[in-house]
Length: 435
Length: 96
Ligand SMILES: Cc1cc2nc3c(=O)[nH]c(=O)nc-3n(C[C@H](O)[C@H](O)[C@H](O)COP(=O)(O)OP(=O)(O)OC[C@H]3O[C@@H](n4cnc5c(N)ncnc54)[C@H](O)[C@@H]3O)c2cc1C
Ligand SMILES: [Zn+2]
Image 1 (cartoon, each protein chain N blue to C red):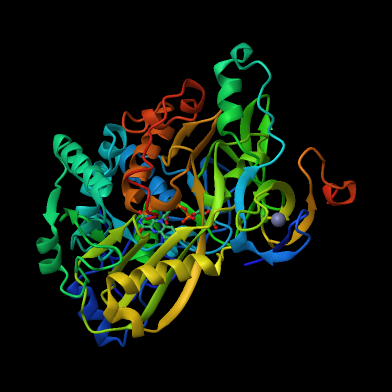
Image 2: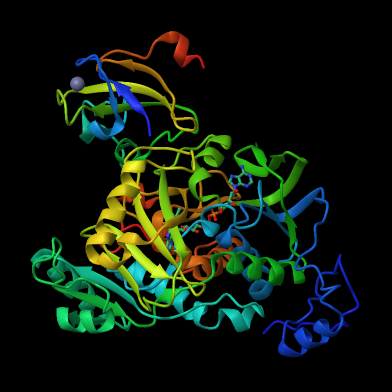
């Protein structure tokens, strides 16, 4: 465990690294007595140093988790996280927060399960409430083929020690009374898989929690600093050009999701990735009515109810490349049609907001973690529509990969050279519905 | 949401009538067995994926069902040019 020095509540902004004020009931009461003035800043806002051992590009959950585990597990603290906007302003803050580990292939199951285990203790680990709520994730089958795929996945999960249950239509109806399970429905529900340990979490809190804990160990978090170039010397990386000047680095780790192709091009590389908009919507807040996560790839929708009451609904990706952080109207229209078929009661719910994020899609729907042909330049990308659930695990294995300059065993199958060897890890089934 | 002018039907129609068919100008290698694994992998999987003008193929699925090329900005979604298979995008646009 990290050792947090205790400090008095009167100490304020501009904390020193290593001096994180612990959040607790006691600290809340103490601060309440002083009208909640002078809470310590959650992380510093330092000026960039000339050079770092490791520069991480991208202050989303994965980049911040990488920084945290580098410092915590490997004692590597000469690290900067360089973010062009604000922390979590990319896909981390735009996703529908489904966390689960029921993937089909051994390689991905192990990686996502490792991550799920980290989720289970993450709030304590970071001393920050990430609101991980393992309320169960249902995955519906609407025809015979769906059911065969679901059975196959449930069996594969069990062989890998991952909790998975097969539910009948009656079981589903009992769990989700609002769902239309009539045999006459347009998309009849023939059954489902259920992973009870899966659930949802608070997206921003994940970025903030990792940022605060990484900062406390001396990592510099540089917001509003855009990387505009990658400087290479004799086939080795030398640092990054940024909107705040050149920052030298022995290693540069790009964790930039949908913009990974742009970063790769700065170093003269191309990746097997295409960037596409993926959309989500939230409704007005409702009284509690849905206490599990429901996914269906057959009709392409996924929905859960956040703790503050709004329905969080995810749609599909656009069929074409795009960086616009907005998506086609026809895609959300299609998703809402499916939601209304499944939950007729939702047809009169008003939607509050909708937005898009740019997801980085690999041909096998699996990530790319590790080195590149440029020495010292690493990528952790390709998480596409489903990387939020992997945030702690991805950071953990990538940190070790960077620290030892060899892949963590769980990351090894996801190297860039699998696209030359042909050892793809086809997860289109388990990742088929975007989540 | 955007509209595309089909070069065959010569009509400006909603994007929903069309299907995206991937990056354009990636010819299948003449002699695949002479390629290295890396070269073959690159042909299959590696894409330009630019943030800006992108040369791509579309098919008019709900119309004439023919394939053609489009030069489209992936950030603004503006269609910069529509041209036929076998042609290259107009010079002016490509220089952008
Ligand atoms: C609508 C939607 C729904 C989703 N639903 C789910 C879900 O339910 N479950 C799930 O597991 N996953 C889901 N995902 C996927 C998930 O959000 C991502 O895989 C994950 O959050 C990626 O995290 P990241 O830290 O790698 O990327 P991001 O959070 O996108 O972080 C990358 C950061 O890099 C920064 N950056 C980019 N270029 C530069 C530059 N040149 N210089 C400096 N900084 C730069 C960006 O500003 C950004 O903050 C969803 C995604 C979307 C869009
Ligand atoms: Zn046509």
